[in-house]
Amino acid sequence: MTRPRGRLSITRAAWVVARRDFVAILMSRTFFFFLLGPLFPLIVGGLAGSVGQRVQQTADNPHVAIVMQGDDAEAMRAARDRLAANIGNLLPDFVILRRLDPGERFDPRTIVDGGRGNVAAVLSGTPQAPVLTGPEDQIERWRGQVALIASEALAPRERALPEVRLDRTVTSNANERKGQLRTAQAAQMLLFLLTMMLAGMVLSNLVEEKGNKIIEVLAAAIPMESVFFGKLFAMLGVSFVGISVWGAVGAALYVAAGTAVPQLPDPAVGWPMLMALGIVYFAMAYLLLGSVFLAIGSMATTVREVQTLSMPVTMLQLLVFFFASFAMTQPGSFMEVAAVFFPFSSPFAMLARAAQDPALSPHLFAVIWQMIWVGLLVRFGSALFRRRVMKSGPGRSDRRGGFRGLLRRASANASEGA
Image (cartoon, rainbow, N blue to C red; front, side, top):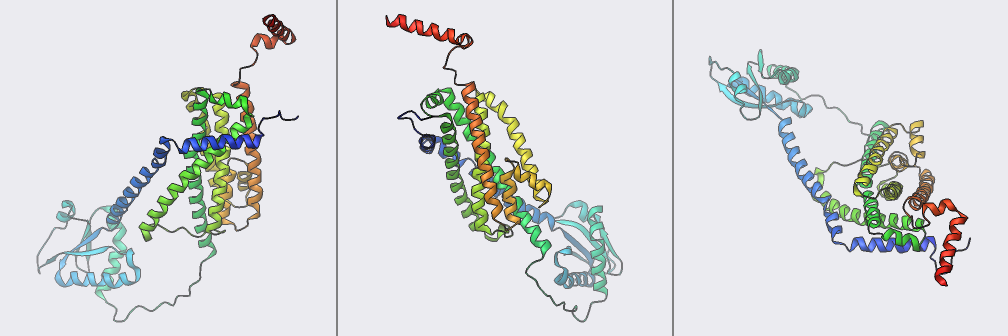
């Protein structure tokens, strides 16, 4: 079947639609606020995280107040410091709160019940018979440590502990796999959040143009597949612009934070290749989910219908993400193979595979497989749109009449010409 003269090809028509939508969205005022939208939660989350970390550090380092006679108190603190040089944070912090005079009596419950400072328990008595006063959970946890410190205070070692020679290796298989699993999990989570946050733009754009009849004008001029492909790739381009801006801000915050940000272990394919594959798999995940949203948009006429129809897809996509996350923990199993072949979980499963497996050839076949499904879903969505929305043809009675209806229209045209 030859294309009518002057009619654009599917590829060229899709490029025209993509360029039109891309420029229109970038030049709109709402795009600026769209870029700012995720930055505020990031900034607020960063501030809340720093404050929470500070609070957690304060809560995780409660003090044990020492209330003993002067020599005993100094002996206990000195013993704690000697042991801390070897076992560090496993020991509670000792603070001498009060040095008792000989024969002086003091009730440690007045300090615990009074809630003084960051004191979680009070150590009284003597090194021979220490008494730990405080809440049950705290004193049970520190019972062994206090006994060890008291033992050290009673018989301080005159010589240092034996030196342990360390024979270091670069890593171990268990540590390497655990680290790569953390990196794979972080990559999957980032890919899922970006896809779910940005794919909805396709749906809102289509519903808006259906409301003002622009989509019907485009469908009458160019193939419907071109309209769908153009809108998908236009929104994908807009998404890449947004990700570039957010990535630049995130990189600046990362540099400013320095060592405060935890370091992820290196992925199996290396960071440059993982980022490149992340871009590719984001595009695939976006196109797959966007094509489904386009099909939903072909059935929806109002914003309420969009919300009703898109909610099941969002929930199913969340289940797909959990499926891919579970498959990530079982490399080489049937579960992982199923996640790789299922089109909607394939980008997430393959990105996690890149973090744990250095082989690159499977990614080529996975991308081709995902592109095939993008084409199939776009054709399905465009056919659904034509069948449900484009109703500018003959009426229902004429379609039932078949050839008779065609004769009636031809007679009416002849009468008007006469």
